[in-house]
Length: 304
Image (cartoon, rainbow, N blue to C red; front, side, top):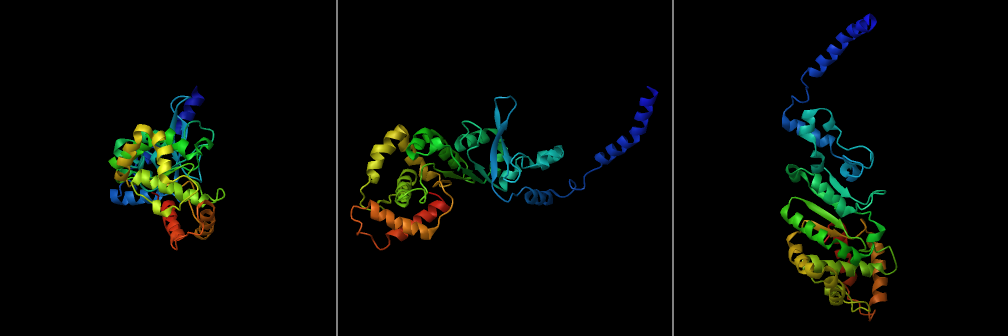
């Protein structure tokens, strides 16, 4: 007992000294709030998109979203908030205002596809932090089950309407939705035409724009036939709501599944697609391919 007491007595001054050091006011926290915010912005700006990763919640079966980056995917991106209570109060969630947030499929986590993961992220986001959100990207990658574009539209029609309403209510937020099955022009033969054709379908559905003049008289279905055979049967009673609300949410942007386009290669694929699909391949308006390139460039960079 005596030996233990002496040890405790010898340790006491060191512990007291450390406590005094910890109790001293932080020079950083004494800086003006405006300057601290500039430092937070520098420290919390990532070099790439932040990823929404689902991790274990309060129970074994529950999951909660956590923001990570590509360099340290196993660690929460914002480590500043763990320093002390004041830094937590000042910086928790602040990283969303400086970075683009990406929700893609997560290997090994069932049922958390991009839209589902975003909905979970929204639930966990404090109402006061909504004004900080700027840019959200939903996908890719996607689940292989989502590869059929019309199947995806049917399964996610209510989610898409919810996203439209969310963007109408939050005009400061830009949400980029990559649509599974909207093909990359390089993913198969003659997909340049399919890429343009589905873009025209989505322009009509979500923005009430008619791009029929861009589509050749084709061996394939027309836009009107797609509407009557697929869009209306799949979306059922929701189609008019989508057509009405879509133009009111220009900050919800619809993109092809890929990110980048090689315009010269696309021109070659586009010409081959025209020759394959057109009823009369010789009838090629002089500006047809240029129009395809112009729209496809916009869909890749800005979305519909």
